[in-house]
Image (cartoon, rainbow, N blue to C red; front, side):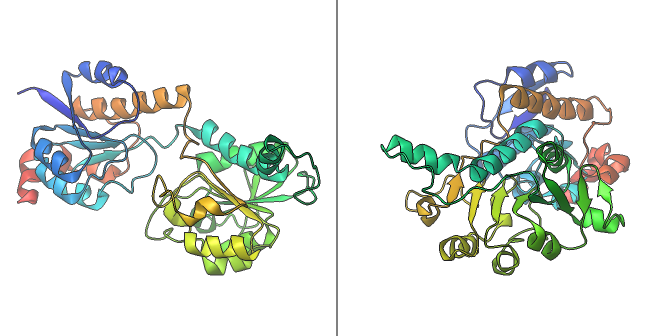
Length: 341
């Protein structure tokens, strides 16, 4: 029986990179014609591994994948994988936490600069035939302003370095920083603060860099907008649901918040009549922050290499659940099948 890797979905023209890497361990690709659960459940029993981009790898899919050893995410976030069920079944889960660091931090910085210099409204105005450099109010010098980073992983740290080079003061808040006892000290280019409220109240620009979890769902809502300056700007290049978009709409329309830029939404793409499309002080980009020729190639290589490592019996470079890898469950498939029953 040949070794097969189920590819649930992908967003690039071919799978040549993956096919080449997985051929080194004698594996062939099994590409799903659809990312819906029923299609994945039908193919899952043939899979020794699963490669997934955005398709939900649900409990039902994992239960059906009785040969499977590993689930690999094309990306950083894991909200489309039932990691708890994978743990129970002894499946190694991997991701690629260090790809697109340059791209997403660049994109967040571009949105920050665009707001600071009124780039989008100026471009729209001049295209319509007007010429008025005072139309959107006074602009402030960026040097000396405060950037607040919510979450402080690879991307946030890269953005902190870039913002510091522009003369900004950078604050960072994350549960990890507070647990590590770094509050009030410099961590890289940012100063760690002790609470989200403290960061929001002090920041001229707030940029979100957290994964989507039960702790971060609707992390930024009515209370948080009330804590921010009415001149502040919010940027989100992480996950859409970390913001309560109804509360964001109210804050933008009422003037509680000066503006926002979102590269991610709870529902993508938004409906044509989505009210967010109509808000003038909101900039939307189409989940493009991660994208470059280099980052996508890097992502594909690293995700496929994670799978190849597990299939050859080696430790993958990026493991989400190392305790599973260390346990007997990921090698003893008979035990894993019993757990499924």
